[in-house]
Image: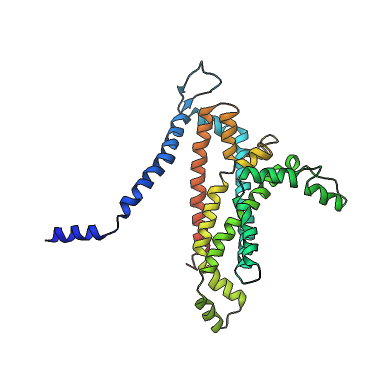
Length: 299
């Protein structure tokens, strides 16, 4: 009798696990199997330009070559500067725009659409737009404003390559931060604000004691997603600076490309890819701890 009742309950329950299983299998096939193959090749010596050598197992020699390469540490520094700078800029601008959009005014839908537009432009297209219309020292906007103020035009991509990439990526990802934070602001119950007003809290106190605690989870989500995607920046660098001059604007993602498809060293490129994944996981865990420590009192 109990078995029949339990079977009846199981039939009445929605098949959540069976519905999720195909997606989970597809995700594992598309992400974990390529990563396992990358780990396998990271222990091999394989240079496409030397087919006579074949593929030879070399253990940790590829990782040793990466960690003893001075260029790798410059790339690591570039990645950290690029990621942190873009996160800070996008969070500040995205929060400010979200606060502006979280109110009623004429043409709000049009203005919101204009702010969101950069996020839907392909990275390569955005890079071409900035490279030709903004950074070009002959006819770009930067050249025009330099002449207006009586200054000599600057070739941004050669003199300030990393800063140029930071500005492009920030322009693209600020709308994403704005959307997530705006969703958090619009989900804030009006009763909480009214209760704070009845308690005599001013606008600043309402923002610090009511709005910020409510946005804790949204801030965690937007920072972690932003960190994950910004670490993978590639198209903007490929189109504008190609990682140069030298390694001045090369991040870890582009370093994998340069190692694997310019130097044709598949083993070393795979080792860099594995190190990149490990560093990404470490950075995400660190950011989670920092954010939770910052908002521990609010939580």
